[in-house]
Image (cartoon, rainbow, N blue to C red; front, side):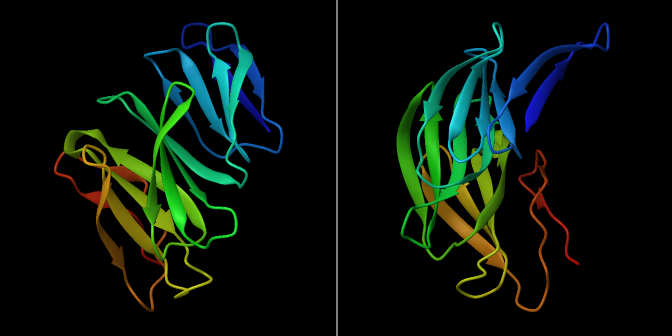
Length: 173
């Protein structure tokens, strides 16, 4: 898979990043000019030079990555090797600062951050446990789980957006 950068003044491709194994989400940290691409691991690209500069090893597929502009940290959502529980890794630069377990959450697929309320919301399908999709909130200031939402009998699509009131938006189908 590839990530491309397009100039907003010329509308031409100015960078092309190759991500082995494909990429679904990525985040840009304007503080260090780094692009964090999720793959099996997190690949760090220097946006100024377009060079792959570092890999953060997880050992299991990372499913989502997001950036909080308030605290300048990256969050990666993944499953631990040999464990059904999902985990949110807090990353600064090239280092994992903390891992926040999300007990009972299996097969994580996405996350969205709400910087105004210091919260992130992780989405898991939970196919191995309840077969009921679930959204879990995490306080990024205290690095603790603040609650979860699930609804039996409905299909909850991943959260896509949060607003200034602290609401998280997803789709029930």
